Length: 174
Ligand SMILES: [Zn+2]
Image 1 (cartoon, rainbow, N blue to C red):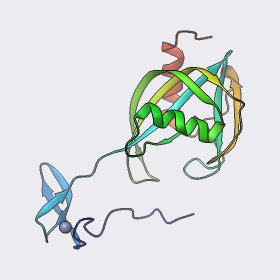
Image 2 (image 1 turned 45 degrees about the horizontal axis):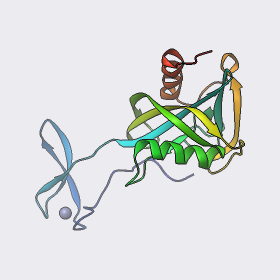
Image 3 (image 1 turned 180 degrees about the vertical axis):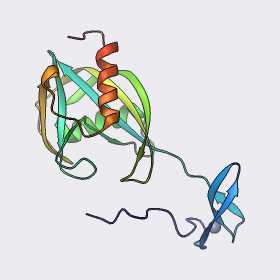
Image 4 (image 1 turned 135 degrees about the vertical axis):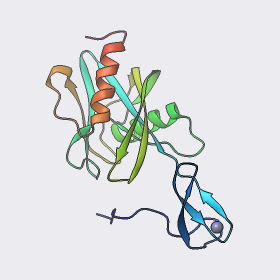
């Protein structure tokens, strides 16, 4: 496993100068003295997908950290140029093999991540229609539908919250 102990930038990504810290606009910020400018740090945007079929929910067994060896919703980080819903559908295809349609925005949750040492902004979609067979891939060791009342424990509190909201607000809640 890669060393996650210090992911803070040490050098300016524009000029390569050594960064320091400066208190500005209410908080400590990374500061490039060479250019006299601060680096503004923002949350990492990610998506997660909820696919429910006949009272069962699709989960993936994670084969890497964070949440190694635990079940979670399919999902991952949004890439530059992708819309959130495109990212959700892409990750779903990569991890479970299915193509999903009819997205419904469930919620946006932010969570502090000890692993990534930053805030993760998670945008959750429910997909009510899909095609294809379930085939685990990418960073999923397994992908499977579980009866909603027999779900295994879920790796992330944000995913538990997203599932709860999807079930509460969904149109065809079992
Ligand atoms: Zn610089």
